[in-house]
Image (cartoon, rainbow, N blue to C red):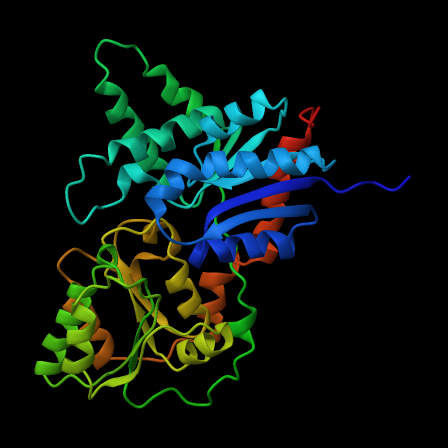
Length: 371
């Protein structure tokens, strides 16, 4: 008798960046059947508010056409309580797993937003409504649980603190797998650069703290510290003005400045670097730095956020010490060995984490089929 593979619905209303890479990894490395429902990565607030009824209509249509699924895996851009209520009224019972790439309790807003609570509330009620929850780092999980505790304390006349334990009871940490193939396929350079090349490959947004990064480089340039620069990462219509300023101010040191859509081209540029840095104000995981490390760059990251889980202390700088630490690296640079690169990154490759994801999703199958 032929054994039928479990079939899961993947729902991603913000299909871009690390969310898209995660979905592609699941589809490539897990021995399951998947059907993807996705929307482009834009208008995140509207996605959180309205993607659930959109997805419910899609699922109802698929089931009406005779399709059958073992469960749903979605990101936090889905209001799971709304999704399940809509499916319930259509007679559809599907278990739901949620993957938390981020959480709204701990996202640093650029301005004070009085409406932010609606999005933290969606995160919380989704966690209550989901069957299984996974977070991409212990930092992300701890920040979420801390946020829930503070949130529930606001309801002084309702005893709801026990719900924190309810959420914890169905939660685990699963690091997102990374496909390092493109970086491993780049021919290794026989010699590194005479002048160290610094890589910055994060989203062009305020939470990655580009002001701190570029101001530090201008300071080092003023001290006549030699370096070259490659700036990558996804940019958006309303990008911080600091990028235009830095592109002009540091033009003598710049090798490349801008987003590269092609992953092979991106990997080749990373392979030209020597040092990859982060000045992030918030980071729930740190995939961009791990990609740079796999390409042969030495990491220099904050001694906080999710980076404390990824890198030993010798690669982290303390608060207020970024310029000093980067200067020391530039003045005393030693090439990063292939052995060091693989030791730091291989634990996060899809080949190493796929089994944990298969085990997690199989929980949805046990006794929870569509009826």
